[in-house]
Image 1 (spheres, one colour):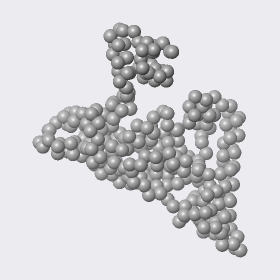
Image 2 (tube, rainbow, N blue to C red):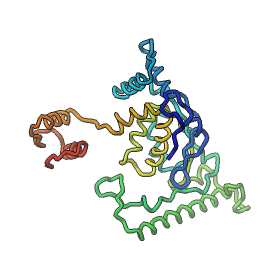
Image 3 (cartoon, rainbow, N blue to C red):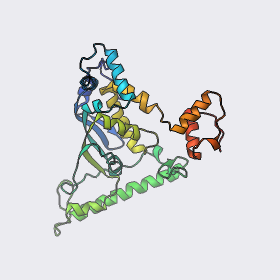
Length: 303
C-alpha cells in the first residue's frame, strides 16, 4: 500500500505525488506503473469551477463542498483541468482491454522498431480459475490445484518456446547477437507475430482526471478482469493521495453509489412506503429484478 505524505488532506498539498514521480510501483509479476508527470490538484479543480461565477470562497470546507457538488451533479469540465502521465508496463492482453478507453493519449513501445524482452506473464496460482458458467467473460475458482499447476507449466513452457522461435526468426537476440550467421532473419514487424499476448509491452499513457476516474470506475470494479484490476488498484491509490478531496467525492458518489432506473425508483419508493412490490407489475426483467435486490440487499421474492 502506498503511504500518504504528511498533510495529504490539504487542498494544496502535492508532497505525495512529487515523492513518487519516477518511482516504479510494481504490478503482477513483471509489470509496473510509474508517474512520469502531472498537472493540477484539488485546488485546480476549485479554481476552474469558480471562473464560472467570479469571486471565490475562503474556507477549505467550502472548497470540499464545491468539489462534492461538482461530482454529485456530474459537472465534469473542472476535473479535466488536472492531467497525469503514466509509464505502464503491462501484458499485451491487458493493454488490449485498456486501450478501449479512447479518451487518452498513448505512445506504445514498438516491436517493429525494437526487440521485445523475454518477459511474459504467468498468473499466480491463487488467481487461476476455470471458465464461469454464469459470466461468459469471467472465471470461477473451484478448480483442482493439480490442474492449476499443470496449466501454469503449459503457459510458461509455450511462452518460452515462442520467444525462442521469435529470436530464431529474427536471427538476433535482444542483446544484438546473431543466432545463425548464415541468415539475415525476418523483419521485426513479422517475427513478432509468433509471440502470445501474455508478453509485456510498455507505453506512456496521459489522461485528464475526469476520464481517469471513469476508467477506474470500470476497471477497479470487481467484475473487471483480475489483471487489469491490479493496475487500476495501484492507480487508484495514486489518485487517492494526489487529489484526496476529489477521491473522497468519487468514492462516495460513484464507487459506493448505485444507479437506478425509473422503474427501480418507483419500486424503492413503494418499498419505503410499505407497499407491495411485485415483479409482475414492476416493468423489470428477471435480471433487473435480481440486480435491484442485490443493490439494496432486499428480500424481494424472485420470479
